[in-house]
Length: 109
Image: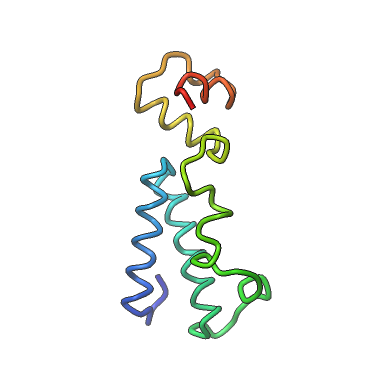
């Protein structure tokens, strides 16, 4: 988080990061997603010195309700990497050579 961030943004960052990790993202990817989300919200609310046009236009993340992130747990919305991570946790044999469709079938999605 940037210096001078508010406690609200710190909590938001942690929440988004933990949510990503729960969905099977790597820690690094979850941190990146959380940083981008919080920075975009800071730009929208005028808390940052600079803001790109894409940060200030369109629906915000809370308004979208996770539409773009694939939230909701639907198997068609999950990435191959997320499916692979779940298969790894469940000990699915041959997962490294499976396609996304094969991973979905093996996991029963």
